[in-house]
Length: 304
Image 1 (cartoon, rainbow, N blue to C red):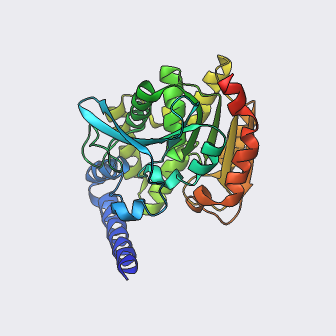
Image 2 (image 1 turned 90 degrees about the horizontal axis):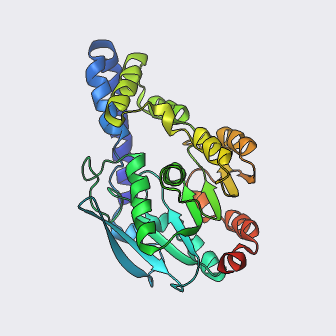
């Protein structure tokens, strides 16, 4: 009953926002752009801890990492001397969303490390507030945990988490031996299209949002596309093999863009699914099976 009620409330709120943006497009596009900016950088409020922990593994070792006067909370599983496999959630996510990978990775001989980025889950607020963040800040959260726990042998990342991992690789040289990208957000244009369509942003508000994004971040939105990061890393010979998994019916990120990404990424392979969407993908047996096949004997070589 509570779930149905919250769904109705979200639909009413979304409808009110769409009407608001339609009015601001006509009468006050600058105000609309400011509101859109606030929503763009918002990660939302996570569900209560019991809901987040419903599928989580509970017997890990909790840890806390300081970052810019704030705290990143995480948990690790398995042999501390084993190669590290990092689970990296997406925008507005939490580490338990990837918990179905923990038994598989433990069986493969990894030490599994999961965490909530700043402003997400149990971790402290980001530099812009309690539930507001940026991709570089998510990447910094990942880097801080790696500095504490050890370099990655494997990363398993979801959605915008894929971008944060590639960003950290590019900025800090944190390339793993292998990586699994689940429903990656490959292009910012695609993300902006989904955002604009969801809130019915008109052209003036949308253009204002892009200007405000550049003013805040010091760089255009397109600098956060995955393909240029992949191209630069590949040119320098530091790009590791990858498995990219995407559902053809994903309404939040584009499977077509993932196909283009894999075409340019030497050593990457694509697994397309159908009917799983953006989140059921994270617990699907066929995705876990594809990951297991992709890993092969990598742990043995990482130990060597």
